[in-house]
Image (cartoon, rainbow, N blue to C red; front, side):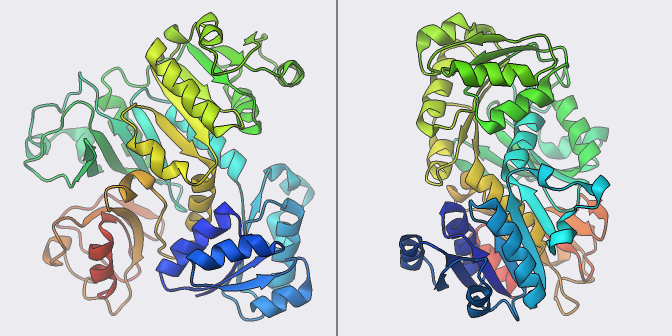
Length: 450
């Protein structure tokens, strides 16, 4: 596909790199020559200097015959206008990054389509949704969603009291909760394991569970024995826009919310937005051990460091974990931290807004792209979406007859609106979308037969 990317910042470069690796024809547009020079050093793309709101610049970038425009800059109005202009020039599809869906109002007829935008996403709201999602169960580490809203992959940390410990997976074939999900991958001590019948789960394993949303949720609840353990105390450290919106979502749920924030005015403004009885607010640096102790972090169910400063969030989570917080969540935005944090021995949930925005764009493309998963990447693996064509050698065959590499595992099969947790007996059809976990080498081999 011919793809135009607006914005050569960290997000634009990350998305461009992934799309170039899939042999798409990518053009990057940015107003800053320096950003483009950095992109040019690392990427095999065409570069255009100028404003994406300039018709001539978009024509120069090829908007008249582009298949897709991804407006990913940090300038929301420019993103919206670029999509509108590009679509009028002839671009087939537009995806727009915004900072709040509140710029649209379906009740008033002001929708993304009003601006010739096919899909819009807010990286802030996407981040809030992902963080809120992992609060639903104590063993949840990550939730991976797809364009089909019924499809889900949960990443869970296997607890000491897990019902599956010590038993080969084949012995659990009749367990009702296992029949409708796919155990797609295990990460154990920085090693990727593809589960087979003789695989035995161990405490501390990270398990990728795939299937329909309701089936995956039921399995994770069963796996944690006591299900969605009721949360009591959540400490939110740092009042970034993401933190503020998370608090709005958590209010009035019977939770004991505590806030750590150095800026007194910001804390007061946040409290004014909340209808819940005022949470306790502790004024000070989120990395100050005395402030953390004063906020009783040692007794909290969740400690979420969500300030706008990456290093402070990481350090605060390390301190909170040592103090005894049951679950820690750190938010970062710098792309480099995506690869560094999963390698830490310290357990925790690490969220990166650049990664979240990139995966949001890929999900909306719905074209078989590779998702950004730093933990898998560190183990030379990827989660990839592959679409079978009518000429594919795999179409019309059972998965067990496809002669796939042993380390290539199909986590999900999407067929129209249907979500299938595949087995070896599942027959693939043209148009099926495989969600698979595999090495880049195996992915290239499979692509050649699609």
